[in-house]
Length: 183
Image 1 (cartoon, one colour):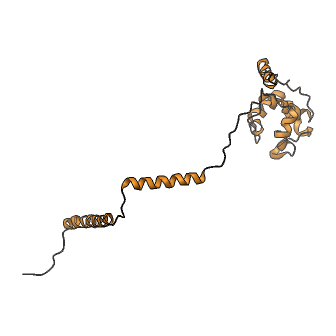
Image 2: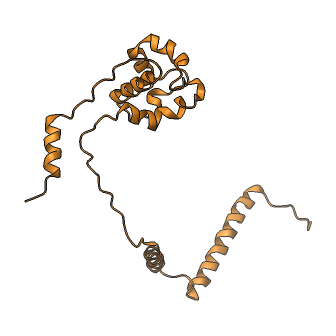
């Protein structure tokens, strides 16, 4: 008889290793259960819920802010001067990005020769380095046209700015009713 060890087969290892891990896990859980370390699942869930509620109470804001929507009434076009100061003047006063400087008749002459409608179209849609509407999408076509007339007229043109659009009568009556004190 030979006393030599022949080794374990692969199938024996596949069965023994997971079995040993499972047996070890069961033994540890039984010991924990007998000493009361493992609690019932309901108690384990209730404790974190209480901790979360306490945490939420600690980080609750002191006050809340509610923002009301203000009704500004009907839109009234800004004058050309206002638009130039707020938007156009940034580039056209200093000549940034090759923008023609306001008041420089030499730079504006070829542009004025193209006509008022072409200049307004360029201002609305953008041209070369200038973004559409001077980079302010909130400007209306009328405000853009007023600004173009203002800058071109300051540089030698004689364009007539379009008249400001009046608010519709229904909007004016609603604004008057809102402004009137309650009796």
